[in-house]
Structure formats: structure tokens, C-alpha cells
Length: 347
Image 1 (tube, rainbow, N blue to C red):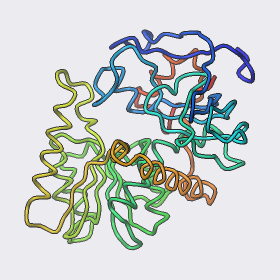
Image 2: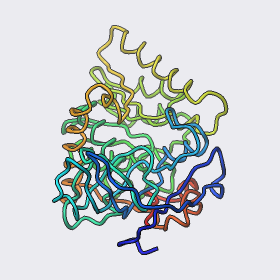
Image 3: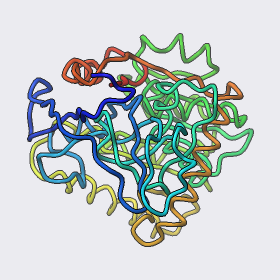
């Protein structure tokens, strides 16, 4: 397919709970943007933990099968719909879409399209949309990290974790990061104090490294029983930010129950008479009730993330670049646990 000007749409369909080889390639006609929309020719999309969960039918609010996955993308605006500035055509933009990104052409609400600064590679920008927004908002809008504080980042070598680490270090914080031993040298080179997440008493090891009073913030994507240790690691006035339940990835049964159980636990902790706070971070929070405010915040924060990239505060990590037609290989690579960074798909 000629991605530059083809009239053919190529997209990846998730038909149900399937192995990566069960993903289907579907061809069709490139859609026409409606009022308020732009048509984006995708240049880079990615395989995140969200799509991995969707493949298993385990993502909290995924749409019914079949659907086109793809949480975020970078591409160039080809055409604009009614009510949209025609001058947007030719602009490279980033968009957070939750589903639909694994396609050669994607319809995006113009208000959700954030310009990508000149000089930033499409794949590099893609690695920082979902991961960058999540890290930035948790760090600054939830934990409100300041220079001189100490933070604990679980999964410090992961997609979100690696961005969290870099942003926290740039803010002047001390970072304790959990990861497997093979990533410790790389973390030390960045200035992170690494801890093996397989350590027999992980919480005790972190307490030895943290200030006597505890950590100012803990970022936990694991959930499960370990969330209790994350809460106990906090100093008075500290903040726990939970943003996932990775420990239940392969569980059977209700996909909502682990999240609801976690939310209940966080609510109970916040109701107790203590000076610590606990949040569950959802990047989509507030969109349904205040869409304009949500969009303005996302645009401002993603712009800050791209500025951090341009300053060198954040280095994008690309684990691999594969075409849409090789999506099964891309998903297997992303789920292998052997790579650092994000697997990127292109047309």
C-alpha cells in the first residue's frame, strides 16, 4: 500500500479473545471526516499494556468485540471536516483515542488532535502520548512532586515507569525504582536507585533506601496485595498513585472486580484520619463531565511532555518498529517481557 496517497484503508481487527495470530487485517475505503473531524494518515501507533489486556478481554471498559485496537497515534492531517480550519491539513498531530489507532487512516475529533513540534520523529512522539500523559499528570497533577523529594516507581523500566523516572529526576527528585536485575545498570546510569522487584521482602528493602519518614510518593501499576505495601511506604503527607492492576493480567473471571476492589481500598484509606493520600489514576477521568476542560488539560500536558523531549529531559525508548501487517509479531514482542521501550507500528 502507498501510505502517502492511497485510497485504501488498512486496519487491524481484534475479533475476540485470541492469540496474536488471531488478529485480522481488514481492507476498506478511507473514511471521510464528518463535522468537527480530521482524517489522519497514521505514521506511528503502538502496542501498550492496554491493548494487551484488550486481547485477553481484561481491559476495564473495552468495547465489545470485534473492534480496531490502538490507544494512541501520530500522523498527518490529510483532510478536514465541516467546521474545522482547512489550514490543519498537512499538520502532524498526536491523538489519544483509546481504540481505532491500529489503522492506516483514522478519523479524529479536531479538538483531540495535538500538534507535534517540528523535528520530533513520529515514532518517538508516539511513545510519549499515552505513557507521557500518564506520567506527567500523575507526577504533577496528583503527587505534585517537588525538588528534594523521594519517590518510588514500580516497574521503573516499563513504558510509563521509564518516563516517570526521567521526569522525576528532571524535577530534582530522588528516585527508587523497582525492576528486574538485568535493568539495574541502566537505571543506575540514569541516577535511579534500583531494587529487584523479586526481592524476598521488597517493601523492607525499599524502606532501607528511603528516608526514615518514608517516601513522598509511590507510583504503583501492579495492584493486588502489593498495594498495601505501597501505602505503608508513604511518609506523612505522601501520595500513593495507583494506575493499574498488572498483577491480575492473566486472571480469569470479572475484569471489573480487581479495579473495583482496588478503588474500594483506596477510598477506605482516604477516609481514615491520616495525612496520606491515595489516588487511582485514569487518564480519561473527567472527559464525560467536562470534555472541553479535559481536552485543554491533555493538550497542555502533552505539549509539556514534548517540550521535555526537546530539552533532553526524556529519551524515547523504541523497542521495535514493525508494519501493521506484522501486528502479531509486534504484539508477541511487546508481551515477551524481553524488551525495553514501546513496540511501534507503522503503515
